[in-house]
Length: 181
Image: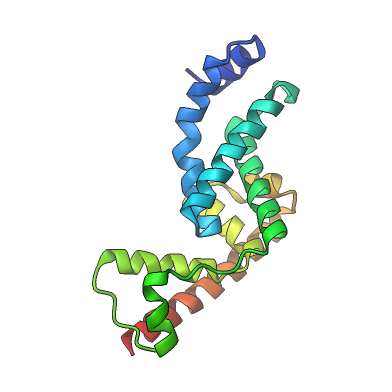
């Protein structure tokens, strides 16, 4: 079922159509929110809140609704609200905390270590730069779409992605060099 038809059915009172939307976007939103927050459990909660907010607000949307962009906007806003409320700090896995404190980091042994290094470097990028980076590079949104999602100019999106990318490369390089010591 296409998105426009699903939204139309929801407006007609068919709540089962919303299940189809959830099935289509749950994994995508969970992955996106995990990258934004660095916390899988928090991402699950925010994904659930996103769908709840979408369910409550879908009847107030217009006929020209871009469902994917709308859901990502809700998810982004939920993550930003959570961050403002709780002042979320960077995530450092407990399994590596002892090595970080003692300075005994080892070289990555497996692809999972590299993935962890990428995630840690990404989480050191400020949220206002990380969000457009993830939307662009991971989720495949265009700058124009990101600008609409975040309520900023397309030029601001370009600058944030460029600055965030530069900082990410620096943080990732630092992470990789630190692990080799």
